Amino acid sequence: MLSLTEENYLKTIYRLSDGGAKAVLTNEIADSMNTKAASVTDMVKKLSVKDLISYEPYYGVKITRLGKNEALMVIRKHRLWETFLVDKLKFSWDEVHDVAEQLEHIQSPLLIEKLDEFLGYPTADPHGHPIPDKNGKIQILKQVPLSEIALNKKAFVRSVKDGSSSFLQYLSKIGIYIGATITILERIEFDGSLEIVIDNKKKVFISRDVSENLLVTE
Amino acid sequence: MLSLTEENYLKTIYRLSDGGAKAVLTNEIADSMNTKAASVTDMVKKLSVKDLISYEPYYGVKITRLGKNEALMVIRKHRLWETFLVDKLKFSWDEVHDVAEQLEHIQSPLLIEKLDEFLGYPTADPHGHPIPDKNGKIQILKQVPLSEIALNKKAFVRSVKDGSSSFLQYLSKIGIYIGATITILERIEFDGSLEIVIDNKKKVFISRDVSENLLVTE
DNA sequence: ATAAAAGTTTAGGTTAGTCTAAAAAAATTA
DNA sequence: TAATTTTTTTAGACTAACCTAAACTTTTAT
Ligand SMILES: [Mn+2]
Ligand SMILES: [Mn+2]
Ligand SMILES: [Mn+2]
Ligand SMILES: [Mn+2]
Image 1: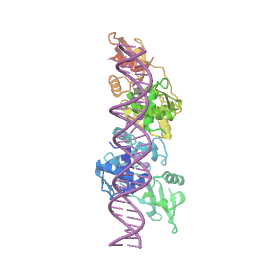
Image 2: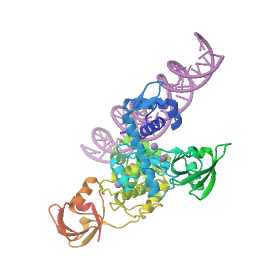
Image 3: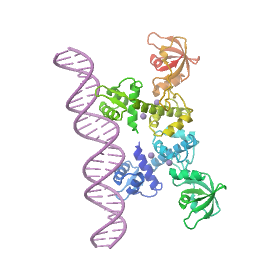
Image 4: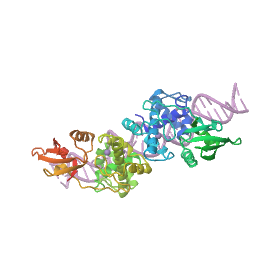
C-alpha cells in the first residue's frame, strides 16, 4: 500500500506528464509540490523500485501502467469526495479542494464503492473534471478554451482549467458556472479580452486569461 | 494543530482515564495502542509540553481540560463519520470502525459542521455511543448491563460496551440491534448465561459475557 | 571547443515516531 | 529490611520524508 506522500507524488507526476504521455523532470516535480529537487530524487528512486515509474538519472521520470493506475485511483477518490462535498454537504465549489486533498488518502475500497453509488455514479466533479471509474477509465469530452470560440456562437461551460479558489470565486461572482451558456459579443484587439453574455442575460467583460481557463463545448 | 499520532494518544488516554477522572499508566497506554512503553514515554513528554496532559515521571499521566477537549473533538468526528457510513452509505455497524479511525483525523471544522447538519445532529453513533456536540458536551444516559436486569422485565438495548466486529456480527446474527427489546426468561446459575426473548418473538441463549456487554435501559 | 550556466544527484543532517537494550525507580516478597 | 521483581525511563538506533551544500552532468553561450 502506498503512503500519502507516495500517492501525492504519483498524482503530480501523472498530471505533469499529461496522463503518462511525456517524461517529467525533477525540478518540475519539485516546483509543483513545493519541495526541493533533492527530495524529489530520493522519492523517485523509491517509486522506481516499486515499479510505479521508470527513472533514469538526469533524464526525468516516466509513469508506468501500474503507477498510472494508482494515480487515477487517487484522482477518482479526490473527485468523488469533491462531488460529495458540493452535492450533499452544500460546500461551494471553491471550498472543496483542500478538504478533498485530505480525503483522497483514506484507504477503503468499500468506502469509495459505496460513495460512488451514493452519489449516483457521477462522471464529472464540481469543476467539470472527469471522474475515473473503478477501472481507471476516463470519459473524455473534447472541450476548447472559450478564447477559441467564434463571435456570436453559443458555447456551454464544461469545466475550468484553473481550479484555484480565487478563480472559482470570481466566476461565481460574475455568474459563470458549469453548464452556463456564453456568447462572445466582441473580442478586444488590444488585450484579447472579451465582452460576453451569460445565459442570454448578463453582459460582462472578461480578461484573456479568464477566457483561456474556461473550457467549453459548442 | 495536532498530528494524527498525537490525536490517537489523546483519545486513548481519555478513554483509559474514564473521561479524565483517573491517572493513566505508561504501560496501559502502550498495551492499548500496540506500542512500547519507551515510545509512550517520549510521546507523553511531548503532549505534556503542549499542556494536553500533565506528566510526572513514574506516576502516569492525567489529561488536562485542553487535552480532554481535543480528545472529545476526535471522538465527535469518529462517531459522526460512523453515523454517516451507516445511515447514508449503508455500511453495517461492524464495518465502520476502521474507516472512521482514518476519517476522524481529517482537519476541517467546516466539514464536521456540515456533516453534523447533513446527518440531522445525531446524538448517538451506530453502536449507541454518545456523540459530543461542538462544545464537547455529551448527553449521558444511564444505562446498565443486561446482566443486571431482573427476570421478566422489559429492557431496551441502548449501546454495546464492546464494539469489536466479531461481537457486532454475532449480535446481528441472533437478531439484537440498538433499540431491540429484550426480556430475560431465565438466568442459568451454573455459568450466568441467560435465556432471553428478543422483541417478544425470538428466544435465544446468550453467555454472561454477552449480557455484560449489552447496555440497556428499562 | 571551451567556459559558464543550469539542472540533478549525492552527502550529510533534521524531525517525528518508532524500536531494543540497559539503567533506574517503585513495588513486592521474603 | 533487604532482596527480588516489575515498571518506567534513558540511551542509542532506525525509517520516512524532508532539508542545505557540495559535487557532478548536461545544456547553453561564447
Ligand atoms: Mn480538487
Ligand atoms: Mn493529496
Ligand atoms: Mn468506532
Ligand atoms: Mn485514529
